Image (tube, rainbow, N blue to C red; front, top):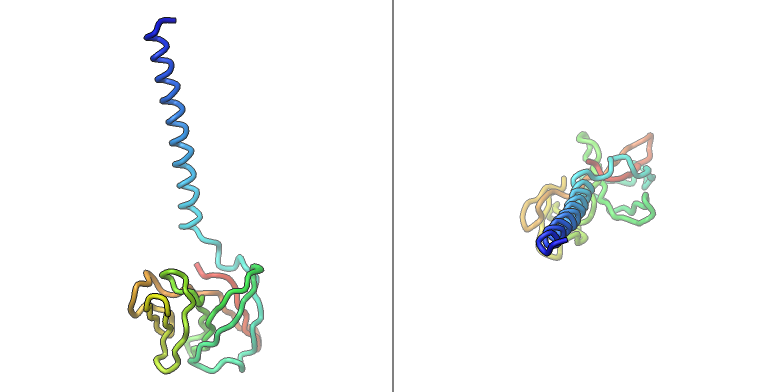
Length: 151
């Protein structure tokens, strides 16, 4: 085999190898993007009873613990009266700091970077890119049940 043929074979081998590695990296990024863009379905986590209807004052969020997937998570649950019920994840959508409800302002405040949310979790100011994440909340009889994220 001539030197020119060896060079061509080596070049072809490198092209195929580098192309294969690039394809593998690209496919892994597509897989990660799919996990990010297609979160778990709303009812993937089991419902858990967190109290009775009478435990919740209308218009006043109550911080509750939910342990549906084995890890305890915090949620603010609010009886909105005629508007129904609302459960919000207590993590700020900016950098996942725990938000606090300020009853005098009727707002959720993030102590880390100054994010402010209204009673329904909508962003009022600060760096959060989106509203607080809504969670499944159901009332069955007199029981208040919490579940996973709403999509």
